[in-house]
Image 1 (cartoon, rainbow, N blue to C red):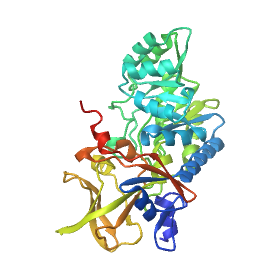
Image 2 (image 1 turned 45 degrees about the vertical axis):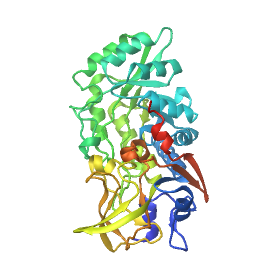
Image 3 (image 1 turned 90 degrees about the vertical axis):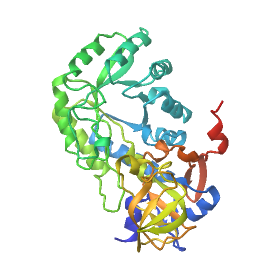
Image 4 (image 1 turned 60 degrees about the horizontal axis):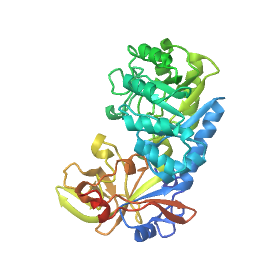
Length: 419
């Protein structure tokens, strides 16, 4: 596979190897970015995110006459990211009062925010109601009890009822969310009573039903089956089909196109319920995964039966490989190509702190700069302070310029809550 194809498939749109053999992202030489901002660091190609946002809007516009796209901010909860997608016409899905504060800080209007979550607190719902969010996704009966008390007539709070349609897509069990035995939503047996309860509350407007069957989905056929499962619950004006579209994490991954994704969902909705229904969708990973790379510095290379290349990050900045076996690729930033079979490992006091088992790097040595692509989804979101690690900065790169949108943590940040 040609280098240009490789960079386009897994790396941000427009990434290239420059005349020095160094990776450029957003027109910026990543070796220079590492020198300026340090490592580890999340480098986000701003124009990549905008291109993907516009591509999804165009795809759904071609497939549906009535749709709304809502960025699933849990994938990358950052004010600058939320602001970017709001500028591109997206709403914002949040799963807590904290994520809502991030979205509001990014300038997302409350009316464009959707509050989600399977265990929303009193504070989550109270703030959502007080701020006048556009919609609340009801996950359980206690949500309804609390909303009946919190929403005062004549106000009308728009809600969607989350239903588990009993569909398990072909994905990892940890990110499969639509089966019959899940912590999310109402199963098909209990959904009718919940719908009736919601319709009885005068201060609520049950706008439609919601489902989300899982993430990193390559086979789109389960979406129609999920809608068919909901057909027995009634005919509603709007249906939120969640997100789920896969992203490419390795050169071999070939996710469906945005056009295929939108056409399947819009076609399934019309096939099951007929024309005239509003389609909502919650893309997250498919918008942000490939728009970001993480930069690391190699601290040591040693051979203990296998070769271990240890970097200055790990499970504190990318927990996904340890959490559910997510696969990534890596390269030496100024020396692409393989030749050395190794394990790319983190700095943390855990044997499982392995970013990539079976990596292939070009003669790795201490002091090298390693780049791991496709880290935009859930890297920053799940970053933590294990072993006192300082969470990395988020750097936006565009047209050769770079700016910090989330600064690197400091030692003072680690101590700020101590009393």
